[in-house]
Amino acid sequence: MIDLARRAAGKAYVPYSGFPVGAALLLADGRVVTGCNVENASFGMTICAERTATTRSVVSRATAEQPRIEVAAVVGLKADGQPCYPCGACRQVLHEFGCRTLVVEADGSPRAHDYAEILPHAFGPQDLED
Ligand code: THU
Image (cartoon, rainbow, N blue to C red; front, side, top):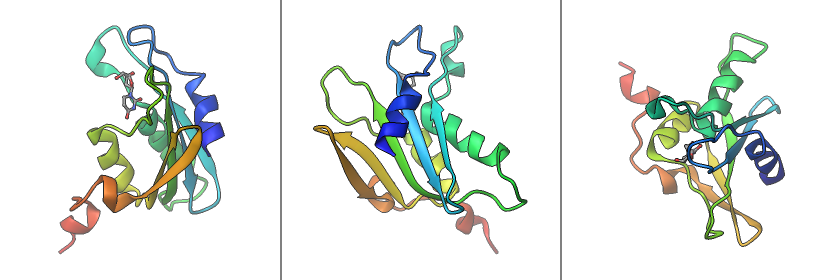
């Protein structure tokens, strides 16, 4: 998953930040969907890698059922070599589709987090149920 995320980072469109990020999502149906960040001259229109992968997993599904994200792997090529954790907006978007585990790369090895560690007390679809 980390390798796939790194490969996706290689596709990033980052003329403004020069900071490529890649994401790979393992879905409950066994599919793996990747994404990269796509920047824009109107900076606020930039889409993060995690959200690119999430929207791809919705539009590419074969059935009416929405994707369930088991694992999200994220690789950001940071100058300091430290792991790249998803921004707050992406944490929320991954949570919408039930993300259970986040994997980042730390010292060249995968580091896994239970999702509640990175988005405690999350607000989600269940909060809107009657
Ligand atoms: N970025 C991501 O793709 N994912 C994150 O979770 C953090 C930030 C991107 C957005 C922008 O293209 C670049 O990293 C610098 O913020």
